[in-house]
Image (cartoon, rainbow, N blue to C red; front, side, top):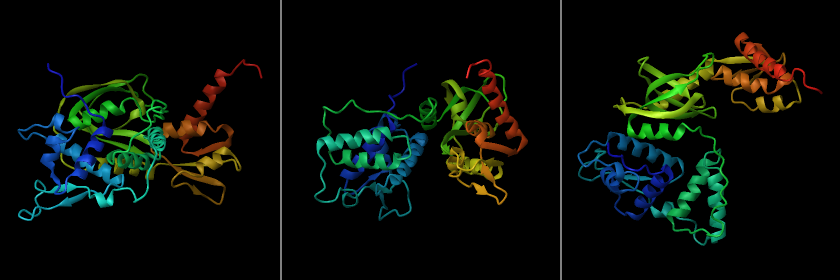
Length: 332
């Protein structure tokens, strides 16, 4: 079986898209972009079967707009309202660096290294916006500093293959360890969206065996993600559906805890989204996954007492008891 086209990294594809839209005055149609821009053209089908590629382009448009890139759309005068004849461009006047602002090669390199470090962290949008702008305007780096690029990786190993399967419209198989199960179980899924909620990545898709949508926490996927054949994704905003479902779980799932004043637990838990403090000294926390919350609370030891629900109290107790057993017989 012949190998498919080589996968182009997302950063390279976005950079190529920005560059192409910067150099055109009249704009490019979607078909022109998919047929010519690096990262799309390798998978473009001239016969017209490009539904997955078009969805990728729609996601990329959202990404570059979130990065602050001023993407414009121009309707065809003779065919208004037709998305197929809509033209896209990035006006240079809205994207160029301020007049007189220049960076030395060493400064460019340091900015690039900072962007690499924070690529997947809380400063991702800002760093990627800066890097795209600098690269698209021809900024060059100092070669003697290249190679000193620390990485902070917060995505699970399954993220990249799942993202690739999502872009290609491919089913996947993977082993998934659900809390309480004695062993992982293989899942067969049609991926529809990858979303981040409360700092954790989730896969949203149709569980083929169950015949219903499911959300999977990436940290519970064990081993390799395997492709399992093409499928046609249903229409709809699957990202919004996934986030809405997770948000609903977060909203209705609460825990009541008592936090020791003046402790690290008070500082950290007090910053959680939606935390509510009562007059009796207790705090109410929202959560989407009881087992993850149990891990977090157990890490604070005696600084936190779980009042309810009982399932969370038991889960925290079991974790602390396991730690105590590990230290039985050790000397002080």
